[in-house]
Image (cartoon, rainbow, N blue to C red; front, top):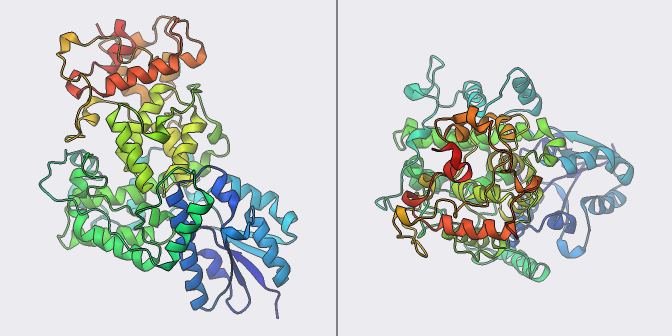
Length: 543
């Protein structure tokens, strides 16, 4: 009989059709799954994120046993420091000579598997493609290298053609348009009652994990209760059905909306289930498409939902593997200030920020507008250190893995895309804040325009030199909005206004504290009273 092999399944690979399982043989091979301290601690992951993954992993291990697999499952209290410690224990017991593993979603882990694990484990390591994604890394590289600016919109169209999703018999997009994003920006008016995500009462397995997380991470960021996440494929499918039946019809209209009385509105909190492997992304898209074909959901809702998965999710994954490892060190705007304390505590007068942090702490979730327009834009304006804001996003959200989080943080939040490809980077604008239609205002917000100090609110938000701005097309809209002089005049911006991280000449004392103070004053104003960002940064250009 051939020697047994080990099959490692990671916490975000909880799919029965995983390539490593398809390659293996239950009669011969042994599955290894492990809760290890090193994967919990390389960033301080949200406690609810840890509980979700451990509970889902334990349920998946039990399913594999029922399917005839032998599973070595190592719990956190067995104190294995990293994955190789657990694998060594199984290799010694089984005599395995080869490890099969589906490629991980992080560069650091893939490099360790290639360069360190064969010698450390004393066996060969065979890394298989992750076929759960719809575009391979090689196909994305070929697509990107053929284009001067590989933008997501064109990649999305390529994926629509390849899959046939929302396409007619002539190969044209249903409805005559590829993208209905402009119709998906309505304020929430309160007329359609938000269903919220489907919630589950935790069974014995999540309850055990919650006790473990409470004992091992008592001071870690994040609330453990209430815990209502799906932790099995069946529960995740029920969550998907709930979303399609009750939320998808209104998802398109209100997908960008925020409301102080509801943390979810019409979002289904499905991304963490897709990214962990509990839901298949293509099956999810096909189910949504059927709702449109059956006249159960409008096209703008279905297209907007599919675009997030088929377009954006696949795109950022391709971008991550195309640009790594140098991408992780990108910081062309030289942002080096410490992450403000209120990103953890939520203690700030900026109501939008405190609400986003509260929701993040309670649910390990916040939807994309809160992540990009609120916490993200503020980090950009404050000049927060890129590594610190990247690790914060990676730590606090249950759906965050480096392949999806890093391109969003560097490209969308901190505007550092090395390919200059993330065209949809967004700068703060009063219209975005006004989406918080029901959010109570704080402080002295009712002052008339004539009483508002023109320079004060963003006095400390100095931009980088215009030459750096012009390097990325994503900044073009911001520069054009500065006034009639536009890009040409921005290039003649006077020297004394330099980016603080590159040496400010202004005697402002503690600039980081001033930035935060002025940010609080500015964000607490109603949108109609906020001065133009361009006028505040370069007042000479807005005459």
